[in-house]
Image (cartoon, rainbow, N blue to C red; front, side, top):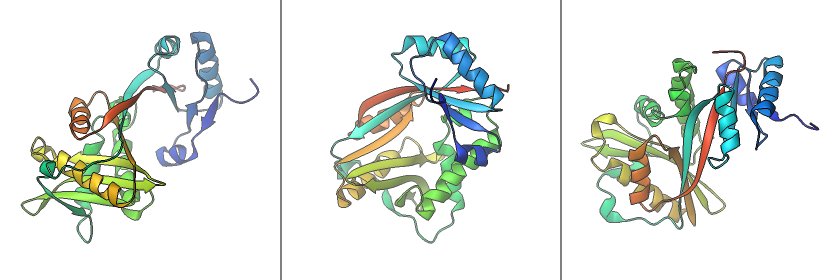
Length: 242
């Protein structure tokens, strides 16, 4: 091969404390994948991701045959355009300012309940928690979000959503509702507030990704005007062992 079939992931490697890479090649059979995993082992890569089209039966079979863990069936939803429905906004939602951040760090962990980093039994649980707390920290600092919105009930923060706008396209990062307040409309209130925010920023689309293993989240997006536009399988490999 003229170029390596994988790419090192410097940020992941530094944050996790072990070499991490992404497999780039597509349409692999079992033998080809084994050769790549052998090359990863020689490079001392501990964790490798491989994103595969669910319709690519050969690649998915190869992943299973080579000991891959199907960590995520990722669904991508799109609202085009984002439209707010005031009737669905039953909670007060505002930008987060001048309050304790700890509740948001706890909500960030809640947002990752179905994350591939949490469901993969080989991934260290403390690292999962640290990863989602870092995601929230970077959202609050403006590195990974333009705004962090919070929903309140009886003066208590019960949910959060992070939003970003780039060239007319909106993106939702973290979405979480406190487990004690789920099923009471806070999720819809957050999505409606996000739609208002996107419209105010001139966005003509809004996108969000979630896990197929989280049917409540999928239903929430669908009932708030989002349609399914993509599915991906994300496999994890531990070439040096778990």
